[in-house]
Length: 377
Image (cartoon, rainbow, N blue to C red):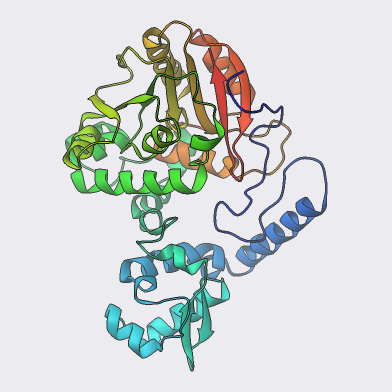
């Protein structure tokens, strides 16, 4: 047993604040106070939307946060001293009245505190809008490409295929879908890598500390983006070395930055083959990007390359099989629209792994995260 503990309820924990939204915490499962509070909060949010629709908090908040990040409002403020709206407007190049209304609305959502007369300061939640915050949301909040894809998303529900790449993207970029656009447009590739770094930091960075790495000598991160998670793992397991494997355009960016300490980088296509020589393989938020058939192909590439006696660690959200609320249900729709992929239940992952020649040995819920680690051999 190579994980510190196993659980039969992996992936069934609540958000515990991991998504930055208060009032949505608690454990999904047996009825209790936390479930009741979650349901009441959800009811209020839903009713707000049904009352105002396009003028509601649900509809407007993503745009308001994106604009605040694009202007750099939080970067020009602090949590200790209120700053006048006029000063902030001058610093970010905004209209004072318009900015006052934006700050007032976001203060009502807990991102700032104060009022137009005395000025505003950052809250702990608002600090995450800063680009230099260790748990920043800034790169994720300016992800307009997802919002644009959703405008065409009815086609996804008619056809079952991703709607991303069927609108404004042209020619060669659109031909490869979501990742083809990244490969052909460096700016979008860099923005995607920043979002993946943020996602890792806020959703499953704790995996580096919760997994027992003592059996691992060489760790291969398949589709490991810029190596942020692998770098954290190697810090927690200094006896091990790492291999970062991803698309050539990603590896080019990693190498431009000097690579990842203790790690060699290898470009390639995981549908064709992955590097050999590792006794531990990682697939972190990779399989949910792909269909079942594509995911089995990726897993078979891993199986062929894995050292004898090695293990595969899959880090993903697990959709509850009992119909209970979980943020994976919303991410599932997002995967369908953007990449054509899906979120899956524990049973769903077990089927995919079995089809590729793997057997699940245990599942661990990552603390304070909606993600789980599935270990297979």
